[in-house]
Image 1 (spheres, helix red, strand yellow):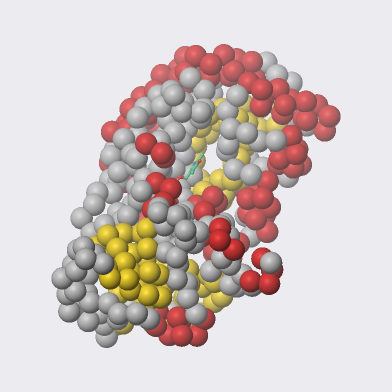
Image 2 (cartoon, rainbow, N blue to C red):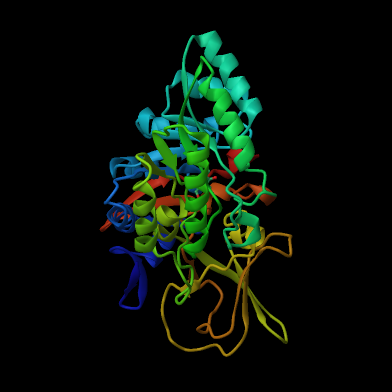
Length: 404
Ligand SMILES: *Cc1c(COP(=O)(O)O)cnc(C)c1O
C-alpha cells in the first residue's frame, strides 16, 4: 500500500477508483500484505515450527479466512458462529482451537461433533459440562486448560487478560487442581496448557514472565502437555515511530523454554496477521468550521470502526490524493453518529481538505469489520480484497432494505 503518482493505492489499484466504482466507505485489504505477514510470522518462529491458529474474532470474513487457511494457518475460534465460518473456509478441524470463558452446551456439543484439535477450557464447570456431553456421545475429548499467569501485559487496560483480576483462565493453584481432576477423567484427554495475556503487546517482558510461570506450573502439575498454546497479542505499529514486539527475541525465549519441555507450540495471532492489511476508504461529507478546529465529518463512523470509541485507539488518517498543502488548522475527524465518542482522530498538520475529498483510515484489518455494527441503521461497508490489479469483492455492501 503506497502512493502511486500521489494517489493512494492498494497494490496496483487506486483507492480513488474503488471509491468511484463502489461508493464509500470501503474496507479494502491487500493480499500481498497478508501473505507477507504470514510468511514473516512463520520465519520468525521457524526453529520450532509452531501451529498458527489465526484468531478469527479479529476478522471473520470467510473469503479472507480461506486465503489465510491456504497460507497454512488454522483457526482460533470463540463461538459456534466463528467455528462454522472457519469450517466454511475449509480450515482443517485438526487445526482449530476453541477459546472463551462462556461456551454454551450447544457450542461445546457442536465442537465435539466436529472433533476439533482442542477445547481450551477456563473453569471446572466447563470441564464438567464437557464430560457430560462426551459421556452421552461416548467420546474422549481433547482439551487444554487456560492458565491465568497473573502477568501484566502492560498494554491498554481494556485489552489486558492475564492478570488475576481478569475473568480469563485459572490461577496457578486452580489450574493444577483442575489438571489433576481431568487426568483422572474417563472422558477427557488433557493435552494442552494455554494462555493469552492480552492484545497489542509491544514489550517482550510480559511474555518472558509468562513463560517462567508456565514453566513452573507444568513442573508442578507433573503432566506431559503435548501442546503449549501461547495465545496471541503481538502488537503492531499503528503509528510511524511506535514500538512493536521484537519477534526474534520472543522466539529465543520460547526456544529456551522448549529445552525443558518437549511440547508443540501453538500461537493464536489475530492483529499481527491481519491488522495492517486493511484500510477504510471514506469520503468527507461536510466540513464544519469552528473557532478552535474544523470538524471533518466522514461517511464512516464508530459503527464501521469501533476501536477509537471502544479503546480510545488512534488510527492514522491520510489523504487519498496527496497535495502537500498544509491546512494549519486543527482537524477533528468524526463520524455522523449521535455519540460524542464517534470520533477518529485529531490532527494538527494535515493537508488542506475540502468537502467530498477522500481519506484513508489505516491499519483497520483487525477488529475493524469484525467489531462493526448497524448502529443508527447504517448498513455494513463493502469489503474488497486486492491482489495485484485484481479486485475481488469479498463481501457486498449490506443493502439498506435488509435492515428495514
Ligand atoms: C483475541 C484473542 C487472540 C488474538 O489476539 P491478537 O491480539 O489479535 O493477536 C488470541 N487468543 C485468544 C484467546 C483471544 O481471546
